[in-house]
Length: 135
Image 1 (cartoon, rainbow, N blue to C red):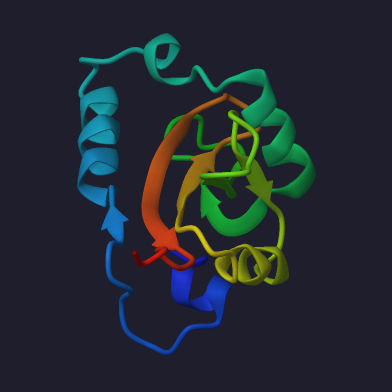
Image 2 (tube, rainbow, N blue to C red):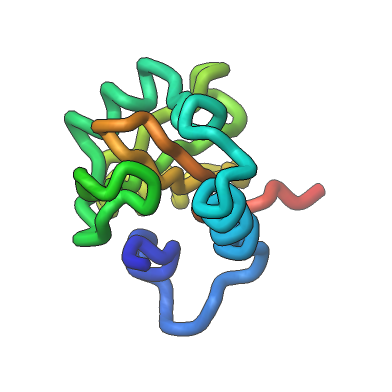
């Protein structure tokens, strides 16, 4: 999958410290759906604001939605931390993430896979960005 933190933040190759990839959990949900143990109504529940972000600023993946198989899954990134809104800030470009990384406080970034058609969504990965204030 694209949009690894190092490509967004422009950091050198190699996985950054603190990256959490949720691929195994994603695969488990998809497997349970395909076996009929979980219904589409249970997993296609994206928040309206997440769907709006997916439609307007989502990053194309070129991958078909594993649930509806009718639309392309897009990635939506959010940052949370001090001096950001309580609902987080939608990160719309690598330049914006680079700007956020220069802040004095460390931020938590989350990349969510979203199907704009069926409303399936899954947390793809999370990672810290920015600097920790040292005492």
